[in-house]
Image (cartoon, rainbow, N blue to C red; front, side):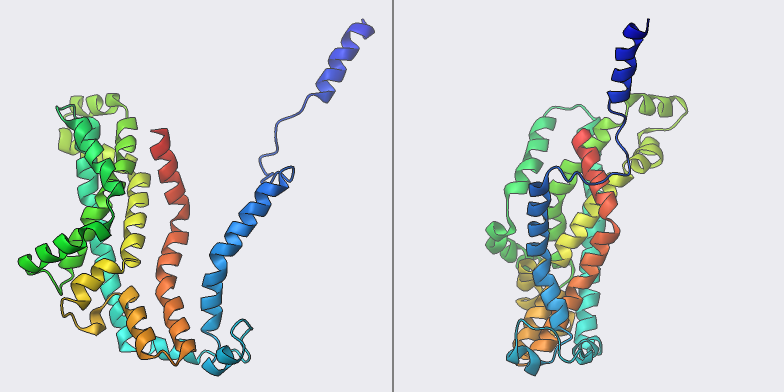
Amino acid sequence: MATITAPAAQSRREAPGPKDPKKKFDWGQPWVYLVAALAVAVSISPVLYVWIGGFRTTADINQNPAGWPDPWTLDSYIRVLGSDRFWGSVFSSSVVGIGTTLGAVAFGIMAAFVIARYDFRGRTVLYSLFAAGLMFPITVAVLPLSILLRELGLTGTFLGVIIPQVAFALPTTIIILVPFLKAIPAELEEAAMIDGAGRIGFFWRILLPLSMPGLVTVGVLAFIGSWNSYLLPLLVMAAGGMPQELWTLPLGVQQFSTQYSSDTGAVLAYTSLSMLPAIAFFLFAEKRIVGGLTGAVKG
């Protein structure tokens, strides 16, 4: 009996147990982590250089461009934060970013709802058109778009920036949201109909809450894309005669660096402060973005 059970007992002892869920890294693949570390270093190094450069004086930067601050000073940041033009650019970027986000999410969820939950002729073609919009850069539409906005009287206004940005954000929004809405079981809609809820009631009470991870994802992507946009605000605001105090932050950085080109420390401080809201917003919603993209792929 011992000769029969011993191998079984030995195999049970040698059988690998379940993996420790707390174990995050597998050091058996060092090259993977080396490549990841190099990619992170290449991505973060320029941002860190700009942030640290804001704590340096212009004379210190000119003497040793790659050195550490000697001495550390907050003068550049204080001057930028005390500038009315900087806060005017923050206001403009916030208005344009929030307007673009709300428009992209509102129109995107309505279009995605129709494509995902309704069966009609041309649905596949419509979805393909939105997918093709991902390959349509804004630079291609610069000339006709600028003429159209001028004819509509939208140059030099916030709406002249928000409306085109919503249009260019819709393809990404719909591509992400359609799989979310398709993954919602049809039985839920049937149960809602039995309980007396119409399609609008199902949309507001059931579909929107279940699609919240996807909505957060597309909202964050639309906001960051709007915050970093340069070409469209240049055409609508700068060329449209809007006061410089109301230019968005990317335009404000360019204008500030031109006006104060000799004050390198202040230019770096202005640049770093203009990046900070978008980076903070992205880091705050990072988990929701990953969860939303994962859900879209699974759907």
